[in-house]
Length: 192
Image (tube, helix red, strand yellow):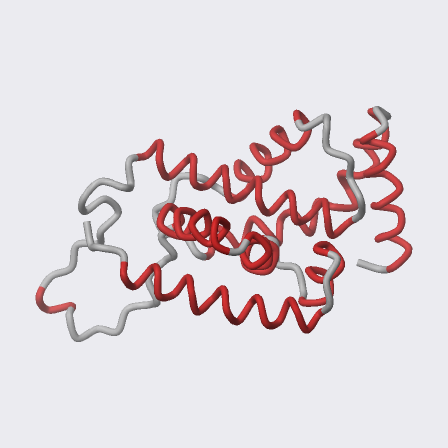
């Protein structure tokens, strides 16, 4: 997104916060491609037979965003950070509603003949990651926000730094430490 568009997004977000309904109509075409990129990123981490489609994820996230009338939008990075958090909540809610915390849910059945076939990297267990991120937030809120903005929001190091009001070096350090901490948490999680 160009600087002019980024400034226009910020202007429209602030107008939307101030109650201008037309600002939302003008904002949608400017943020749609980025929301699609976020949704595709989320869905690429999900299992193949996931029942929620990117369009539904975007629609549900945007409905929730539109209902958040008390949000005072700061800028483009703030909007996409909040959008990432909302998409995460939609996916977690969907996973919980589908009962994927139950033993064996979502497990792929393979025959003995298929064990020698290399399989793609397993999808991220969104519920387990959500629980781990919540645990990280109690330990270090900023590291949790860095993961949310980078992993879920797809923001760059620099965009994340702006959104959090810290230096890019701080984001890099938090990103590295948070990923290590989360990896340990997810690996230590008992198999259900």
